[in-house]
Length: 287
Image (cartoon, rainbow, N blue to C red):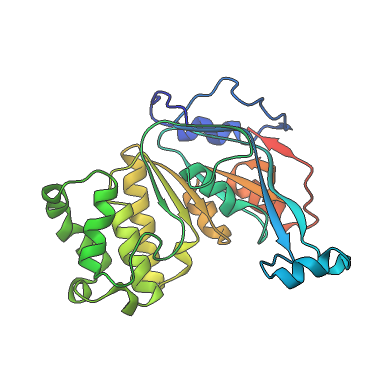
């Protein structure tokens, strides 16, 4: 990964004005003019699916004479020629149908997956919250997992001690921190994971559908917390099916369909295009 330089705080008003001017989408070539805290240029991701895999010698011998027993390989392109630019303090919403490539895109941003093609540039630290309980060891207690999670981001014990009470108070789990995480409900795991991620003072926060779990009051609490970290300059990418959340919180939205960004711009306009139906992988780019 390339590491660039941080830029001045995101100008939300200017970006919303740009988002209302629509023009044809022209993907940048990989490596061309990467700026901002996060930039993906010409990113594509291919997975290979194996059909009829077998280590059984008998099956492998049969495959020599019977094609239906032979192993087949299928290429699946989860992303194709995706360009994403994120400025400091900006919030970006990724919306689209299930299986369109949104979560794969977020994992590439987090560095969990490498692109098959294209270039990714990140400036600063990234705190991914991609699935409930990811990074938590089920046999360890909530307290032990909290210290483990912060240590992975370079926090020493004293630094975590200073944050501990704030994290636990936000998660509202003080009476459960010495219980194994495997006994936590999905909502409890989300609370702890979100509380840890948003207290790490990362430069980029990646959130994948985790706000869909939990009661409405805690969801509002999470949105308020994300607004706080955004105000201090943290950039946020949210994958969600909640279009109201995108309209309320995000400065910009991208509609992902069949592995391509087909619309990008003001959240209201992109959400309207998604709700309008008939979405295809023909790209439209709004600035």
